[in-house]
Image (cartoon, rainbow, N blue to C red; front, side):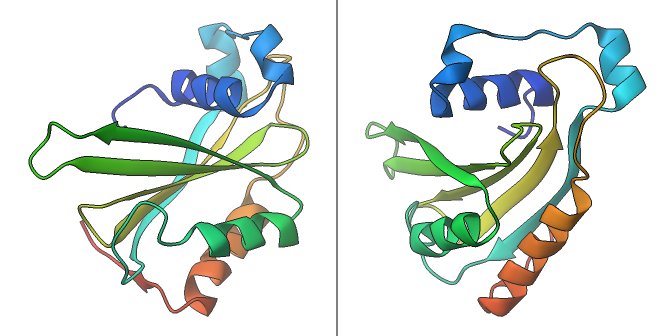
Amino acid sequence: MRHHHSAIWLQLMLLGVSCSAAATITACPKTAYEQYHYGQKASMRFDVRRLGPGSITTEVMRFATDNGLSYGAAGYQDPAANPPRDELSHILQDTSVAIAITISTSNRSTIAYAKIETFSFSCGPVTKDWRPYWDAFREFVRANGYVPASD
């Protein structure tokens, strides 16, 4: 999923998570993306030392609650794959829906992938700074004993 255009991915995630977003899909012009720098801001891979798409769900939900973020999830299963594939993307959003943290886990690896993205439904400037959310997430990774992973 890393290869999808960030804005389209974020819109799809927002559509799947937020009932209010289901009524409207915003497509900002390219000039807005260039001017306001929407999209992925940071990412990290970390070893959760447990296998399975739901391996860190409880901890991620607690992090969301503790940091004033909404929680949603989108899964993918392919039982025909060998071995069967089971993936889960945890989606955390701030109240303005301008910042989203997505954490992806699967049954094929203990390595989780996380990224933070920004967006604006008004196609104007992002109204919140993403960095405090990412700092809190990095502390969450450290506090839970997850180990940073390299590519």
